[in-house]
Length: 103
Image (tube, rainbow, N blue to C red; front, side, top):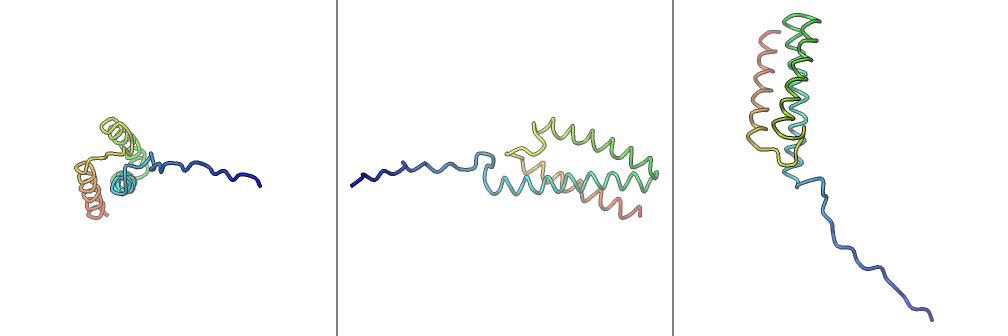
């Protein structure tokens, strides 16, 4: 009769990319709001100046995203402060309101 061997049980390794569900939710909403706010800047540029305004809006978005990355170290950091997410939400709502008033 042959002996039966088993593999040693591996210790559970948590996902090293994620810091938890709350962090994942913050990253998701930050990505969605950054995308929405970027689109709003381009739309406001189009409403104000036309096609050239879209180009100016895209340049402004690039500068804003570079600034965001310098402030947080990454585009979507694992430990994004709640204050940054709140300010981003307020900025996106203000841009949406501005675009709605201009249209």
